[in-house]
Length: 102
Image (cartoon, rainbow, N blue to C red; front, side, top):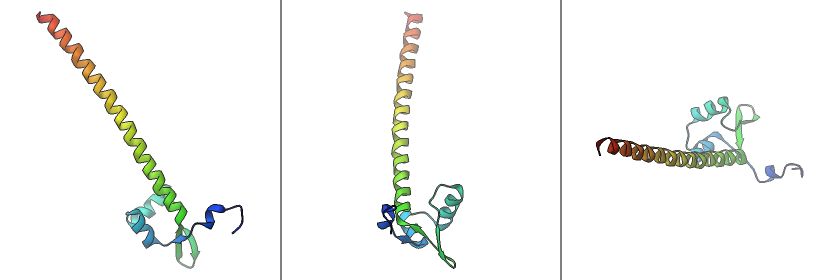
């Protein structure tokens, strides 16, 4: 390998069965996600043989985990804002309600 591609030095080809086992998703899901642009593309090896770069699959897994963590943080912030709104609304409602009857 040349010096211009240091990531390829530590990468290897993975066949479909290994990719399925590593990701935990089915063959058809992998191909659907590839068509949608949400999964690394396969590399033709010759004839009917194809494979994926191990590095690309691990990068994809890492990006999925980052998306999940980011989504969880956003949901926590949204939940916190919603609780603040509801508590503020309840307090405002009770104050108005009590003023009417006191």
